[in-house]
Figure 1 (tube, rainbow, N blue to C red):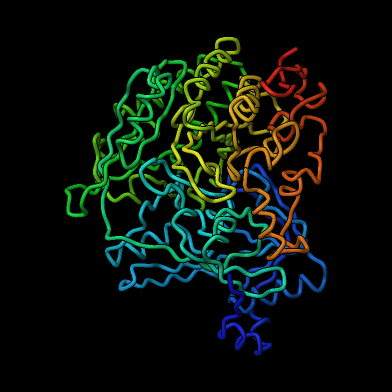
Figure 2: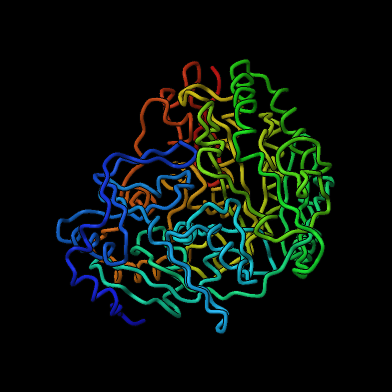
Length: 543
């Protein structure tokens, strides 16, 4: 690895007026789903790489912590700092080298920006898709954002061939070769990524078909693995109360193939928000499990046969298509413009907690059976989009990837929250037990960095070295890039067990802690000690 300071940066730093052009603001910011709120000492929006370097150098001199901030799509406090928050939205250039078949993109650019720029040139990333294309490239790298495939590199991180990052001295470091294994999934604690380079290919389309079948597929390790490997993209929506799944099967086809279909964006736009949010609130208030089960059935029907609902594929006229053909950036990811998204709609907002855990692929049958056992004892229905989503991640060489070293199945539960956060949720006990069980040693579960609760990254769950066999190598790279801990935050310090997770009244209601006292739960609830596998956990139950 070489330490370099670009000539352009050196030249710009010699011009003092440059620093004065950066924008400084005060006040906090929040995760896009409105769950985690951050209160930095200062929020800064640099207009250039030179500005960014100066911000880091000043923070070093003044002993301040620094954190890059992107689209704030994470539901964890990985996005927070009590020091200087750096809004990267102006660091967003995209440079395409058609001859070399590469693209260099700055960290503040969104995946949607990148997809559109490449498409204009008839190009595409190898697998250019995550669930929401409004994420920034820097944020996607920090958290290991991914799509679903066992046949191709699954995350944006896996596609990176080199990157440039500012270290804690404000020097620009070019990262290549083995050091990439540490920096491609970096939690934002190794430095501030400036840009990344990725290979590109000729643009293509994907043929996708949603096929509904019985859930017994999940209990057959050989058949499940075979099916997942047959398709370029493969993911599952599991609807446990119906004993059914919907398998999304995607095959790459030529760009000339007929079809310009796309996924229906209803789930992430305000047209969907009000009715669903009010329905969820009413079902919680009346403790109406049947209402949630009806929502789960509606989600199943919308994905499998195209009844009005959440995620069918449609053509330009809005007509249901299954199978469907379109560009992968339109088919396998969703998008909404600011102020049209369900989480920032000027009305009842869709507030949710994502609980996402990756387990080794060969453990899926045991995990699915354990989930069914828990649900038989503590019935619950899943009201959003894919029920329990299961995506597949090809084994990765990146040290902190959710799939480091092993083909992985990623279980995803999107949990709608109450409009008032301290109010009890129907099925809270089941959700808490499911998460604690999957994260226990029983299933070697790894939490997704950006799609989880605070409680997933602290005791009593396994420590970093138990989850990630190369964590010591990650720390060695961190010692080179950030020996003073400038880019650390509470999220990281809890994960490495330097801080405890604070516990207070009602902290377990939205998974901000694992309860050990009744006061950690909602009113009229108590904390029940449970055996979650390799440790003793706690769940909130009604008195």
